[in-house]
Image (cartoon, rainbow, N blue to C red; front, top):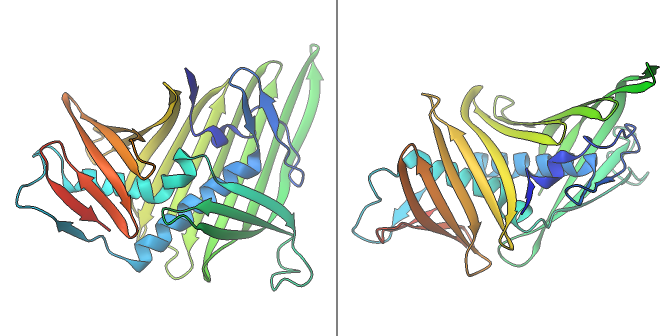
Length: 304
């Protein structure tokens, strides 16, 4: 089994890239090509996608039959899963996010303000491609290299600031990256925040830490300055399919886990639910405008 925690999020842990020349490297143990820019791309797309949905639509649920959800499956569970799908959907499960970064052209309206533009493409459920742009400046805030007792010690940090443009909607973005290595031991972290321009108190903070190949990846969603969701994500390649584990903490710090993997169709996911000793399985289908939740008792509802 090839196990990874949001594969792209390992970026920077095995490399010591410079701020303006972030190059990939290969982790032979897990056979993963990783690139710090990909972490920023995934974070930017995930955060902007969620914020755009949040500001445009309030969640609407329509019930398709006279039954009801299983009693243990609450509105919070529905929100957790729909929010996770909004952020990751094709990006995560198909590993299909692509990004290219160039110097901002002189003909671009943001030339002179931001040094670089990252162009990102993500296939959507309709079969077309969603395009994103992130304009940014990045600079090293600290670089130290020294040799002590024949062991090289390296410390590198950088900070990114810019904007994300999605269909004419602009979001502020901030990224910070730190890397430390002493001999064969390494430790790194990346934190990326996407903020609404119209309401800066609505934002997504994505944090990733790597220590000796062990990765933690966390999402925090803030609405009107209040944290409404905190979650951890893990991805495994298991039995020739990708399995995504979403772990949410509620106000009582109880952990709810959803293991999600592709179903028989490309637009279908099967979710294994666990809350304490309670387990269940549901199916989620991606629609053109929302999701269809089909529960184990046959109850079906549309979540937008």
